[in-house]
Amino acid sequence: MTYSILILNGPNLNLLGTRQPDIYGATTLADIEQSCESEAKKLRLALDFKQSNSEGVLIDYLHQAREQHHGVIFNAGAYTHTSVALMDAISSIGLPVIELHLSNIHARESFRHKSFIAPVALGQICGFGAAGYTLAMNAMKTHLEAQS
Ligand code: DQA
Image: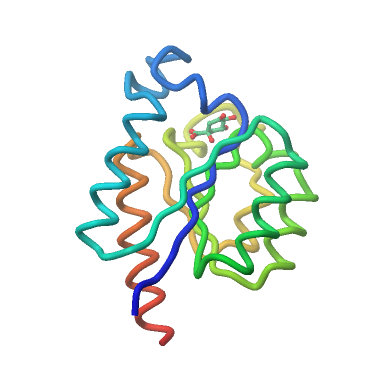
């Protein structure tokens, strides 16, 4: 069976590559998308890759994923630390969601230690930079196969 996954990116992640490279690295979101595409081929996953700076649009993408995908890998950016609405959306769609961050949010400012996504996520991957995306894809595939 070919599983289909959505990789969803939240606010300011469109600026990766130029945004605080000391924290987030020099890799652009387009570079990350490309490496996810090649990992998807290796893993035989269908992949959709999206980004939005808007909380409402991210909620709409999560709702649409219910009809289109088997799982979601989600870097919610700063909304991770603020958004009950995104937490509710994840709880509502009944899909496994892996929370992802490039940086180790637990080693940063205390306001980043709180995640509204973590209690409703399958698990969290953080601190591995851009490599976290392909780690999450492997974790999602393993999970989906174990579920079937
Ligand atoms: C981030 C961590 C968040 O705290 C921050 O607001 C981001 C990026 C990460 O990928 O490390 O925008 O999600």
